[in-house]
Image 1 (cartoon, rainbow, N blue to C red):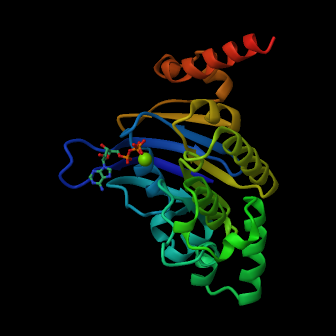
Image 2 (cartoon, rainbow, N blue to C red):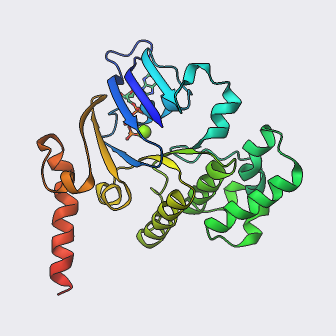
Length: 251
Ligand SMILES: Nc1ncnc2c1ncn2[C@@H]1O[C@H](COP(=O)(O)OP(=O)(O)OP(=O)(O)O)[C@@H](O)[C@H]1O
Ligand SMILES: [Mg+2]
C-alpha cells in the first residue's frame, strides 16, 4: 500500500511547484501507470515515494508507516526503482549492478548469487552478459538490466520511470508482459511512468494522468479509452485510432 496525502514538491528557485497537492491511495497488488506530458511532474512524484526527494508538504505512507520514518536501507529493500535513463553504475559489471542492493543490505554471498541468477533469467539476456560493463550493452539491454537490478532485493513495491522506452516494439511488448506476469506472481505493487498510453492501457489496472503537477484523471484503462475523462481524452485518441486502423488492416 502506497498513500500520498496532499503531496507537493517545489524545487528551490522554480517559478511553480513540480507536484501540486497530489493525493493517491495505491492498494497492495495494484499496477498503476502514471502518464502525462513532459515536465508534468511524473519523475518528481516517483522520487517522493522512495524519498529520493522529500516533499515540500504532504505525507507519504508506505505499508501504513510514514515514509519519513523509514531508514533509507528499509526503503531500498522494500521499493525497487528503475530510473529514467537507466543509471547503471558504469564501473561495475552487469552482475555487480544487479547485486548492488542485496550487497548493501548485507545479504549472505550464496543468497546474492542465487538471486542475481533468478532475476537475470527474467530479462532473457545471454549469461555471458553478466560479466560485461554496461557500456558494452545496447540501450535496450541496459534497460533490461535496470529492471533486474530493481527486483534484486525482493521488493514489495516497484517504481519504474519509462522502463521500456529504448526497446524495439517486440521486445518492449514481451518484457512488458513478462513484467506484468511477475507483478502478479510476486504480488507486487507497481507504479510505472510511461509516455506510451497504449502500453499503459495494456499493462496497468489503473491510469493516473498528471498535468502541471496535479492529477487530472485517475481511472481504469477501459474508462480512459471510453472517453469518460475529457481532460485525458487527447492522450488516448492515438492508441484508440491506431487500434482501430490495425484491426481494419488485419480483417
Ligand atoms: N532538480 C530540479 N530542480 C528544479 N526543477 C526541477 C528539478 N527536477 C525537475 N524540475 C522541474 O520540475 C518539473 C517536473 O519535472 P519532472 O522531471 O518531474 O517531469 P516529468 O513529468 O518526469 O517529465 P519527463 O516526461 O520529461 O521525464 C519540470 O518543470 C522540471 O523542469
Ligand atoms: Mg521524467
